[in-house]
Image (cartoon, rainbow, N blue to C red; front, side):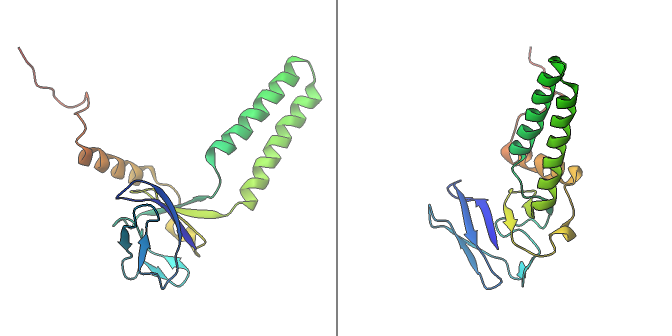
Length: 164
């Protein structure tokens, strides 16, 4: 079981092995220790984020999204070239091969948990599915909260002060 997170102190990406006996995360760059809340890990299950106070986690495929998009784009470009050269059989062969590779990767790849608030990723835990998949409403709530904390300027939907 491990956690990949950005250190709140120095901002460096860190990966650390954790277990039910772990009491703190130690950043290898700045050596800041983050205390793990009691009850956050029970056996092989995680109940809350270890890096921030959030309890909202979502399950997702543990696969690089850019690689998946690159695979689809490569299949599209290859089939388009075959189609432009009137190789109809090759066009559909490339499309179906791309879909088959995508399906196999979906079946083979494991799952990970991601925190909505700090984007910490958890791998190797059991019962990941019980946290549920990505929820846009929860994501938007945390995005809005981060924007308010940063003190971003008001959006166009808010009234602006008129200067003369």
